[in-house]
Length: 306
Length: 306
Image (cartoon, rainbow over all chains, first blue to last red):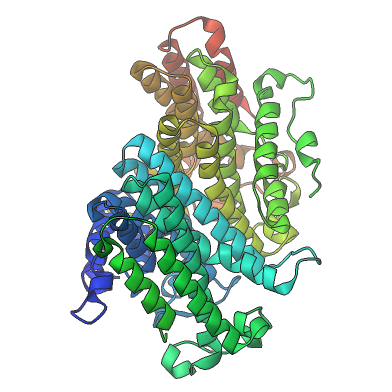
């Protein structure tokens, strides 16, 4: 839990993904600055830093920044929502890892927060990250914009929690068919924050209603695609390559795309969603260069192997 | 967990406290309406209702409404922040009751949420109440006002969590004397939401900077007084009368006002804070009738016996 963690975690290292992850440095600096200035008990601050600055893909903040740029905005205008969505994502991981939830001891190769500290701290640090995500928006953005952005963040967060309940404590009406249950789970559990990420970035950059609609279509398509790929990796990859247990979902009797549609149809679904994402970006207008990072992100997500 | 719980919980019943609790009916109706319309998994909605509509003093929403009225506003303009602060308060109770925290089986005579459902649901329902408190502000208030109010709510929430960490996982610098530690704990743990309540109500009603300063002084005084009274009740009342274990704090070696200052000096502190609260209200201006409920609330809190 050192203070320098932010400087060494998820920065690009000149590899082929560098252009995708380039905005990460600025977002991490923004989070560090906000946390350093916010009066907090020292152990709570360290627990939050431990969660926030661990290794991670930073997919959501990258989506915020790249969505702002895709409609003609500057990355700098979207740092606050990018930091906020990452704090929400990290809060959800910390609570999901708790013994009463997934009971995970490891997260990205390090002890989960409740293992590194204790359960009470993990509950409280998660709560604090949720609340601080909102606080930073009001501290950093003009009021009317902050309210619009925070509304998106709140809906994303609350839908994500609803998705987590649908997934872990299912209470569906008996008439709801399995494929619809699965779509409801994913639309909320993973999709809601991805949607909020893209929308917040676009709104910060002053997107037109048409652009906001297009970016939402893009977000929903990659959100679902991300999950179908995840399900496919669970059945097709080895535990060693993935760094986590595979066939975990099927073993638990959980609904999955390959389980319901088969592997080939699921792969077809990935291709269809990839095409849908690109088509949505075509509608944004402006020079092609603006949407290149979002296209590359989509393609990277479609073929990722871990 | 019936849908009619809201209609039977904390409404005034013509007793002598009726005028203090009168705004509760409208706040509960507001919360019910918001929750009924918000798409949520049915079990999550019921868990939230179970927590929100249990018996309770509704002190914080009453403070919001009465603070709005004290600066010349209407109760109806302050329903959204009143509902939001109660949701934050209830989320904090649900998480505080968890086995990894206070491990309480009973709350106000009923099973705590994790006992009535399960730990995972209690964690998720708490998270959802936190997030929904923000969502309802943006759904119900004009953007610029929503942002100002939500900023107050976020600070109150985050300071409250910081206070909970200070109290349960203390990490003070060795140089901080016990009485300062105690003040830091209470200022945050109980004081932060009381401060946010009064400020949000006053802001909704268009308070002047001077009025906002005065209502903040009132809030800080009654917030601290509430806690000193709580500490006194813990050492002076029987378990039977209080409906919960007494001498619990002293037994746990926790810092308390009577423990640090003695019983008589603590009672003197209550009187001093009561006087300070009234003096702050004198500065609000307007007809005396406007501030009467806040004065009565203060006096009721000073002499409460449970």
